[in-house]
Image (cartoon, rainbow, N blue to C red; front, side, top):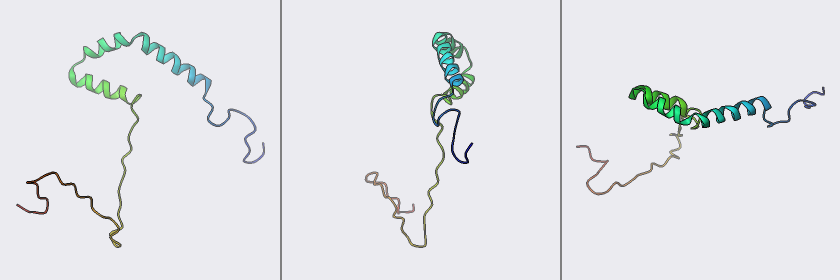
Length: 95
C-alpha cells in the first residue's frame, strides 16, 4: 500500500452494512412495540419515567456542547449588549 493513499476497504463516508442493518432492525423493533413501550413507561413512578425519557432522548436529540465566550479586556473590543425590559427596571441603580 502506498503511503497516504487508500487502496482498499470502504470508501470515506460509506456506511457499515452491519451497522445499517442493525439500525434498520432496531427501528422496526421499536415501531412494532411502540405502544407496549409507551404503556410500560406509563407504569413507572414519575421520577423513573423522567429518567427513562431522558435516557431515551440521548438517542434522538443531539447532545449540546457548552461554549465559552472569552474577551480581550485590554483592548476593550467587547461592547456590552443592553436590553431594555421596559420602564421601572433600572439595572444601573443600586437599591
